[in-house]
Image 1: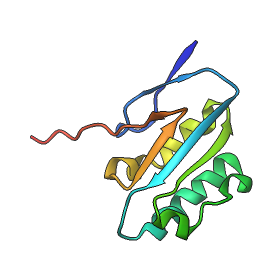
Image 2: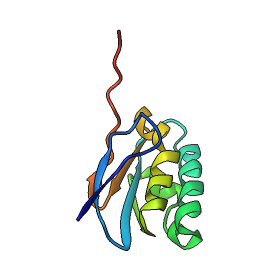
Image 3: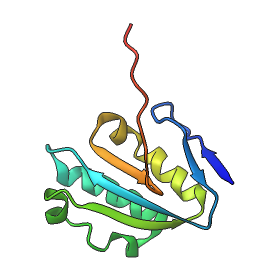
Image 4: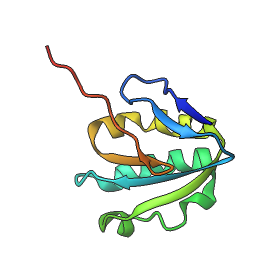
Length: 112
């Protein structure tokens, strides 16, 4: 059975995620300017939803060479929390996030 995760922000499209105990999240830092600060923000959010153990290997040197960091979270509430907190970075194109292999896409801005 699939569950559609609707995020509390209007910047991210809904993502269909299969119901299960654990979800795999992958994060890639895309911003070339101030990648270290972007990593710090994402690092804080990772440790909030998955704990300090999920940060193994997520270093500045790894981010500089295009490392895609992967970690596990239990349940869908931490997934929603993580994506909601990083929605601004995804919408700005500074971070790419995959949930169970599905890329989180920002909504297209409509200009009048």
